[in-house]
Length: 422
Image 1 (spheres, helix red, strand yellow):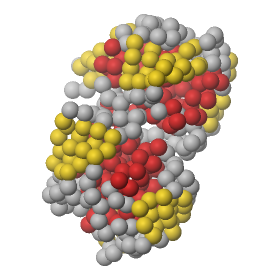
Image 2: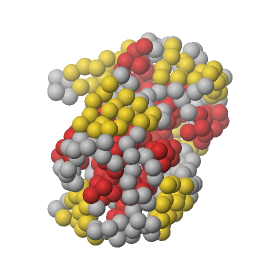
Image 3: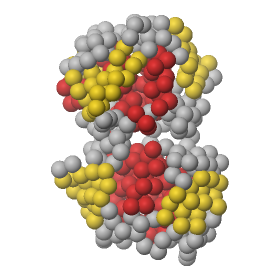
Image 4: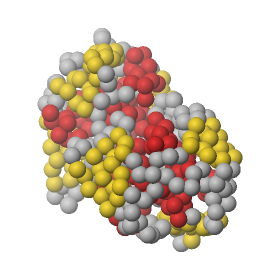
């Protein structure tokens, strides 16, 4: 039976809220444990739907895992399969990461074309082209990407676009390939840097993390390790907006890496939001006067993250003036606007730009999460709207937010999970 959130809005929030480990760092880290058989301890892995989906795939391949205290223990000693089943891969886009991990350790892999949120086209061409430059033969067979090679040899790989998962796949393969691999136009996201640091800790020789070009000297063997997952910058951004929407200035956010959010924080400052640093990785959000409009243009890191634009849209409905959000990465990212407009937002879309004329009075309404981050945006809208908001399709939200209802309830929010009987 499907579940839904029922939210009673306009309740002042107060207290502390902690950012969980980054889902988008944990997923490639879990896949990377395939590169060196043995036991790993990954601290602060969030217990979200995407993590459990990728762990189901790991179990299928022969791995064993258990959550213990604040870490995830994975044993990959008995992994003996190199193919991922469609019914598991179709649940998430990140299943494409098994392409690099399985190719690196087995020199062959079979991974279905991935599923995930319907926010737009995310082609696998970058992965296929990059892997072929290691000397692999690649074919598409019945919806599967099939990779076969006798040996992996490093090469100079130029990505047409700084794709995060393509960069991560190529880093995993390059860590075990012969010779040197050079990845140009590489993704710079903190999650990519985290994977690179994990691979280095496992014994890989990697330079240039966080820069345009990554240099990797392949090793014959890597070793299992212990590592702590970085904080989730998108969840952190979500909580910053949650606090900014709360006029009482009484929300403290813990485990936040400001250095991972420089562009969103600059936008918050333009809007009229100040971050007061209380301790290391602990901030309090201050709202000074009326909120100002701004212009947001999404771009690869360190530009403004596409995952935060639906979240910021909710804040901008409360700004005094006209704001513009231009989406350059995913053509279906604005689907959430139809849902916000059901709540009275009145947002217009022209080509790739959303136009928000605020401040806008939001009223509770039945709405549906169209993707993970859109769902989070609707939850925030429900918290500031009059009356009651019901959010459907919450399984998408559960893909990336750990204990969201519990965290919001601890601040005083009236939000409940209810069985949908329709």
